[in-house]
Image (tube, rainbow, N blue to C red; front, side, top):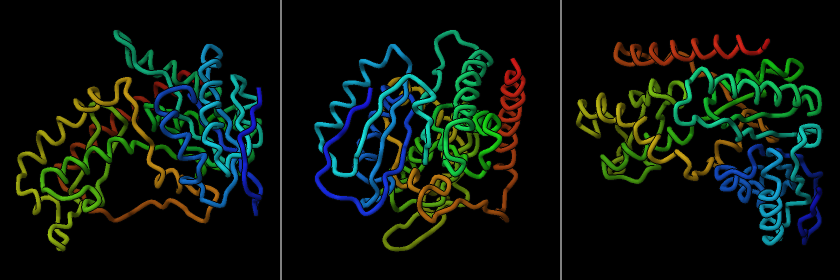
Length: 306
């Protein structure tokens, strides 16, 4: 099924083809409007939006399409809801892989990984076969780092630097907790780092973070003045709150991060920051989450040949 959205002005450039997977889900639902109205790829960039989900969700996708049509967004030239990878991945400029298998009650993490390997192996192969070789891929579905690795491995003809993943929900939560503790707006907090997957070993690191208080920028530890909290409840409570707020409830993927994933359509690029000073406390936390990441990687890769 192909459905066209209204357009009220001529475009100065060709539309780009943007895919969102898991498009009938709550996370994608909170994202689609921002993409379609130009927050993500620019106010002058027309878009053909492709929506992929499993066959039973097609009636829901039809409803999503109608809602987008009702908005009469000038940049949205076409909406294509589908359950077929050969349709969804054809000639893509950008792919936002939101859909993944959620962890169900009683499900072992190994079983979760196996299910997600199947999804992202298939989608990586579809990227390799159907998408442009310049396609930029953002993986949102958890476990994001591992799923991104599988997708990249399954798309050998697409440059690895074109793949990125995010755990921005966790980053936002860490920055917000610091801001509330200090009593400043969240945008007064910068340089928070999240190490690891969205899991119990994840380490929200504020040793390099800064807070602006009354016009003065200072280290987070100096602003909070509570090392015990920063090294204790701030970290241990971080994953607990994940289960409370992200289990089946909607949250948005911020536009600013998507806008630069990893090179997008514009002239932006990620780079690896080197030379960070890592203290013993952080090293212990980072080693723990790195151990989990390596174990997940090895387990996931073992499923690739299955």
